[in-house]
Length: 442
Ligand code: GLU
Ligand code: MG
Figure 1: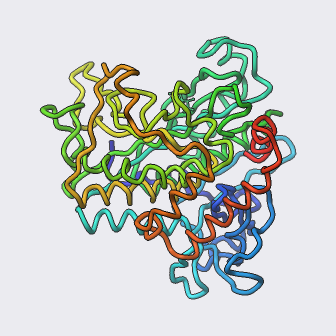
Figure 2: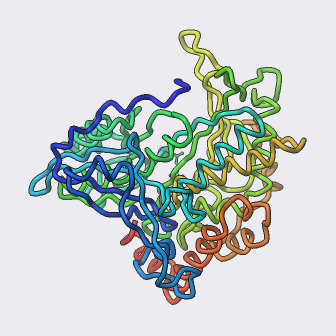
């Protein structure tokens, strides 16, 4: 694993006619504006215009009423010149470059509502308080509705997905997102693209970009990819598992200690204790849709309870396996996987919340209990349940003053407003109807 963000391999020459400058908002929708290639250089410096009330947009496209912005105010979307993906030309659609951007004030100073800035602040807070640097990777599952029928994990499914599959791997690799593999998953028409870990901000940027690259390549091949947490109540979930590792100032990994339970160091157990202590508020941010909580139930291999366990796919926090083949270094591999996220969550916000919760744990002396791989279901019956629905998770967030303090007022206030508005919008639907409605968006 590298400790510096790798240089993005493709600096665009802008033979593409436009670049799209985007934020990923509280509903995890990528929104922004396109500029002609001729204006890219000046746009990289001073951005494009943006509107504060856009932060109150729900996933259904309306601005949540009674937001704190109203019709006034102006912001800039200032792209990060190193954070982009080039999307190839496909039939009838020219190539373009998608940049991720910070939402700033007109003088370029940070704006309290910007989710990407919230992650930058969380990274800095962790580093200032502990000297530790976080690396992460977001592992995405998604479904392609036209590819049902072939068995889970099968070569038949992989071949049936051609030429889309190979084009997707090429596009993800070409965009510098470092795909590790491409696999037919367990659910009907379900696939997964794990990408390599990298420093926290870049990892979250890549999650934002990866979703759009997958959607775009699917569209180009006449398919629609959905990342919805659950396409139907009795279906298989689409998770986003967030892998986190920590390094000290010398670049040495700090989560591994072979003498301790699960080989997880004291630093790791404290970080995990913070995540578990704030779990109920965290899931409001990492699994923030009305169907997310249908996925977060026991026996779905999503997250069946708020616990830390060795190699258990039902745990909220899983200690991932280390490979010893060929004498590989276990210390460099051991890391934590947070399993209760999905693609209705903004990657910057989800990772910011996890790092802040972990930092709260590092600031205390509680250590999370490591449930061994051999723990039985009867033994695990004592672990705390996660909130049963989005309303309960939002209530937990509203009660958790520490969690609220991790974000600017504009952001955390508007987040709760948007999520309550989304809940209200599907209030009359039965679970199958809510699943359909959310799948239309994601
Ligand atoms: N599909 C499961 C989820 O919803 C994850 C299965 C796996 O471990 O990859 O999170
Ligand atoms: Mg998976």
